[in-house]
Length: 360
Image (cartoon, rainbow, N blue to C red; front, side, top):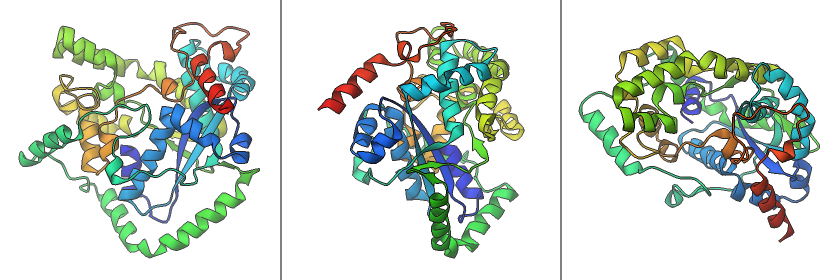
């Protein structure tokens, strides 16, 4: 969300931005949803990341006039099985089920093939923090922290960089093109739709990779800080960053580039890392605060500064669980079987719930 809001500040307002959300939908295919739109209700209720993405879309629309296109990528068990061999080959030398789950999500996100969100769900201002299955920190407590930092004169302006200034000026100069741009976007959508399914034409994919490693976003960071203190947390964050390239970057790049996309990792940009290096770990996170507040504190404060109130306090959820792909009873370090039968490793409890809901 922070990346989307910052992209909005520098990109011409006439440009549409695709938001890709992947959900594991069991036996519900895109064509099933097109024939019976009520099946979207099941996915919204049962897949936390889908509900989060729809609420995120509404929050972005509140702060920007841009046309945001949310592509709902729905992956069935059958489709996952069909693509599992290709994913496993791209994944090598990584071979754990956790890697497979994360890689699968990125693979289908890169393919960018799904149903364009039709504004079925909207959230009202009064309905803040009501995403099904989501957990939140206290936005008022976070606001107080931001207010205190502001009083101390420590909030940097987001417009000091010349490129950002020029980007904002371009937006102001071209606001009158919004209606014309929206019409062009609709024409593009029509051109790229096949049997009701849209495929993104975006070439650049922005990834938030590095945020958890740099800003203390993992649950184990909280555990280390509680048991061993700040020095141990600093060491843990350094270790995470040092191994990021071979644990995450190579894997993610292979998946995203599989369909001709290019990944961009703003949190790993040199200028960002130079700033982070100068800050104390207590500026980056405060793990004495509750989940949804103290983890990745600096990013949460930026999100709040950008008026992304819900996003600022949303408790982290690993993508393999938020999409309802992974089975929590299967250890993540389990090796991928040579003859992988995905139905044996996916979230069986979720499959049962979806089947039951479809029969109601």
